[in-house]
Image (tube, rainbow, N blue to C red; front, side, top):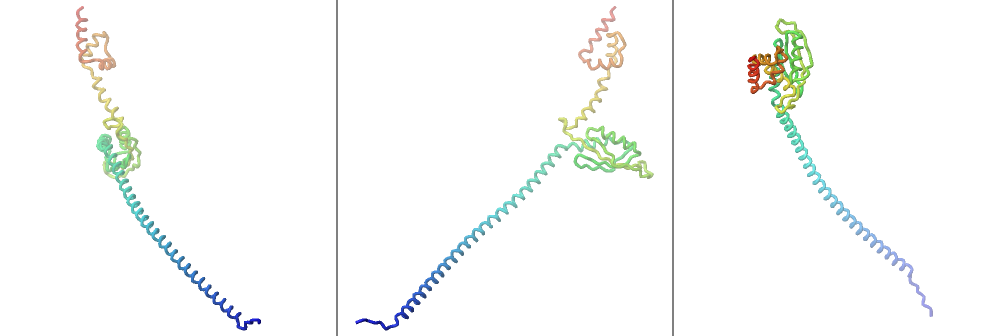
Length: 252
């Protein structure tokens, strides 16, 4: 005998499938939620790690900025010390220059001129003063250019004030200074040439007994040039020898 199932099995199977579908959908949603939460925690951890790295880098950058600022301050101090050192070396090298300059100013200025102001800037010096005439200024410029411690002089101004004073002309000069240290004693090379003529009169002066002895030995009058030429050759040890020659020539 055949068995016939008259129950609504299709509806029950449909309900079972729907229940399984909702269960699977819930499980997928839960898994997605768990994955999303895990990904969020992982990203937060990475952000915190990067924030810590950024904080560390900012601290190191701040320390480097402080070190750079200190280095810049040290460089400024070093530049100041080097500048002081250069100034001290320059003053040490030119410590006698001002003394010689004042001495040369006294020697070179003519009696018909007078200085009213002086200003030195490096290797140049400006002079302001008054004079009796323009020729006095020209003479003063020639004396300055002949000085071993001062060089070329440029006339900056000269004018006649037409006042009743003894020196109505006002002048201004720009003088280039010579650099000392060309010789071991610190004086310029031109100063040695000025000392040579001073010893020339002493060498040219010949005593009268030596001149008479030279006349007797040579047998002709001794000119001024002969006396001047014979003077450097004469020595204190050779002075008595012409006297014996004179006595020997006087025997006949």
